[in-house]
Each structure stands twice: as C-alpha cells, then as structure tokens.
Amino acid sequence: MASATTSGQSVQSETKFAAPSTRRYTPGLMRRGIAVGCMGLVLATVTACAPVYRGSEQVASEPPEVTYDYSTDDGLLEASSKARAYCGQYAATPSIQGSILQNADGSNRVNFVCVKTGAVAVDRVVEVYPPPPAPPSAYVYRTDSQLLAAIESADAYCSRSGHMASTRIVTNLDGTKNLNFQCVPN
Image 1: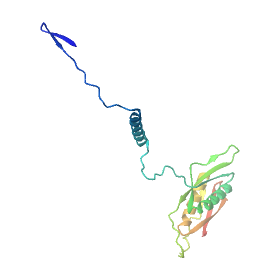
Image 2: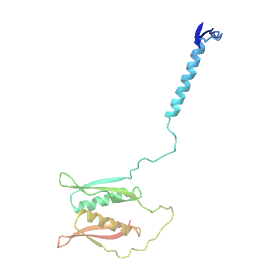
Image 3: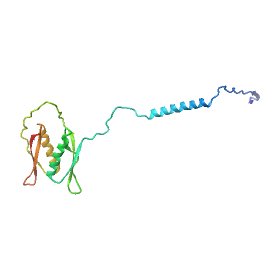
Image 4: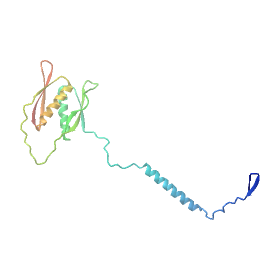
C-alpha cells in the first residue's frame, strides 16, 4: 500500500501487481532463440564484409622487355639487333626505356621495351612491297643516346616498306660517327 498527501488530505491507494505470466521459458526455447539471433548476426557481418563483385579489372601490365650490357658502339648496335629479334617474337619493336646507365665496371646498360606494332598477320596473303626509296643512308651521332635514336629511325624507315635495317658504324676523321644503313628484306 502506498500513501500520498495532497492539499492536506491523506489518500491511500493500493498498488496491485499484474499476475505473473503463465508462459514459461524453457532452456531449449531460450537456446533456440539465442542460436537464431547469433546466426542472424553472423549473416549480417559476412554480408557486410563480402567484397562487391565488379567484373574483371586490370591492375597492372608489363610489356616484355630486355636489358643488355655493352662496352662499345658496336656492342650497342649488337644489343639493339638482339632486342629487335627478342621483341619480334611478340610482334613488337624495341624502344629504349629510360636512359642509358653506366655500370660500376665502366660498361653501360640499356633497357628496351617491346612495343606492339600496328601490323596484323594475315594467313595466305602474299604482299609485294616495292623497294624503298633511297633513305638518308647515314645518321651522324656523338652519344649513345643519339646512336639509339638513329637505330630506331633506321628501323622505322625500313619497316614502312616491310624491310629491316642492316646497319654498320663508321668513324669520321673529325671524331663523329655515322650509322650507315640499308633496307633489306626480312
């Protein structure tokens, strides 16, 4: 029983509690409820952490490349020729990547990346190319970088007519050097 005073009058009221429920929780029912709740929580967690499938996505690509060490201009010319053969197996042409580096022993290192050409191979079609016009058959150079640029220019010039450049180096009396080339059939 509880009592309260309002305006000087005392009021007494009875508080009655609701009768206890006749529904009883058994341990088995309780375990099932907990198990269902836990499974729901696990399912929500797994769903939230699962990555969203977006199809395939390229994240990296490296074209074939090849690196050579050389000591002389003829060695660089040979490295370029070997790079041309190496890249040819990928239907690509070599292109210098970065700069020419000097090794600790005094030799040099050059890195070529194989760059896809626009040519498409076609079966059972024979194409006849006219002989290429007379090119500037010599490039003057002073540095290894200029020699590589001359080699690439000669290769590009000859490949336009379906040929390849045959090259050789000549030293001039003034100390400059020439890369002489002619276009020959592949």
